[in-house]
Amino acid sequence: MSANWGLRLAVLLPALWLVLFVAWPLLIVAEISFSEVVSAIPPYLPVFGWSESGPSVSGNVENYRLLASDALYTASLLTSLRIAAVATALTLLIGLPIAHGIARAEPRFRGALLLLVILPFWTSFLIRVYAWIGILKNEGLLNELLLALGLIDQPLTILTTEWAIHLGIVYAYLPFMVLPLYVAIERIDPALREAAADLGARGTATFFRITLPLARPGIAAGCLLVFIPAMGEFVIPDLLGGPNTLMIGKTLWVEFFANRDWPVAAALAVVLLVLVLVGIAALDRAQRRAGEGLA
Amino acid sequence: MRRGNSLFGVTVLTAGFAFLYLPIVLLVIGSFNAGRQVNVWAGWSARWYGEALRNEQLVASIWVSLQVALAAATLATVVGTIGAFVLTRLPRFRGRALFRIGFLTPLVLPEVILGLALLLLFVRLDLDRGIGTVILAHATFGAAFVAVVVSSRLASFDPALEEAAMDLGATPMRAFLRVTLPVIAPAVLAGWLLAFTLSLDDLVIASFASGPGATTLPMRIYSQVRLGVSPEINAISTMMIAAVTVAVIGASLAAKRRR
Image (cartoon, rainbow over all chains, first blue to last red; front, side, top):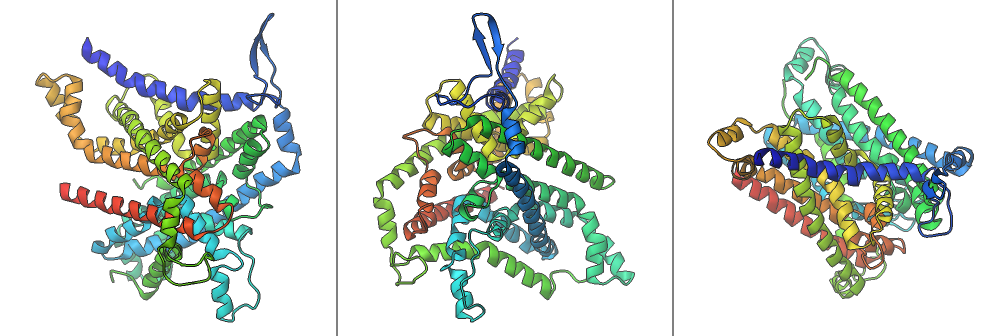
């Protein structure tokens, strides 16, 4: 029957797409992470091959052993985790009062305020990161301003430090934090805050004891949306961080493009993927627990 | 209880928006600087816009990016819309959970992983790397975003309308084209726009998927930025920001009028 055929085709097309462009590529990454680097095109020994005696498997775990033993890789892994965690916490600290402020604004202003938060997301990420170079560099605008105000007498080195990376992440991902926080805070019944106020709680007490606990699903979602891309970030550490700041995304990039070591790059990708999945699972559980009895 | 914001709230919002917009404003002002030194003001001038538009490599990369974004967004919209339809309208089939995970994966995958994975796929398939492979790569993550946007619209649309059309003798295809598609059209358009801007913006995945002769605008900007800040990059950035601002405001006005 033609109707059934149509439906089957409708399922088949996206399913084939997912197998070809999502599942298979990730399996190839996993496969190549077990292969050996050679100077050839492509620069790796295939793991699965056919020889005269039948199928052959030639993989080994050398790449993973290298990742675990070489200080460069362990350092870039730990640095990524640390920077992503600190930057996510900073984004939360800055995003929370902004989301709270928007949720408390008069309803007719809220749409415009939200649009103002989202709009930078539509402008190029690369350009927004680039904009900070001109501000942060030694002879940049920030240092000129501080010098002119007499607050410092030597330019501060901010660019090429971890602080510049933190700043870049907070700046680039702030909308991802503010939106879920706003949704969570806006959903809280105002009667709860009023009740707290009637019982004598002051504004800060109400915020910490009513608003914050009830906004936990939004906090979890926002942190997830910032932490995951921050972990694998390449552009921000490359442009704002110094040559000594290693993050896993940048290390992967260098292994692939500069060193042409595809197998090690693939192994790094697998490790990063595992870390991301652990992060997702943890935050998903936190969110589900916090969301119980709410929605 | 008092509505609206306290003085603290207003201060926080003002500071927050200053933080979000000041770098962009400074970037735009810098593009009109007559001098070569970005941090030394030498008077207003549109000189760098001329320089940017005379830079043949830069202009060529704009065309590459536009072609890629147009093709990738369109492909992503077709695949993503069908995917969203399958996810929301066919609730039970084997492998549905896998299907869902597959569509959401590109959303949470770090760009370096998706870029590397797609590159290794193209190498395995022996595809020549160039505009075509960048289009396929961008369509892959674009389709995920389209699927999310369209399926949230489909979820709030009563399937009884489609069923009614089919009861009246329309084939499922016809019901989809005549009943469903007009209703979800704004979401499909929004998904296309999202896929289009994400494609225009992407550096990492394009760098992996691209080959010689297919340098996109972000790839070109990136290679210039590595050499240092220059007013020419500020000028090209300002033009991009202006184009996006016009497009976003236009789209939201169009959406408002339709409502």
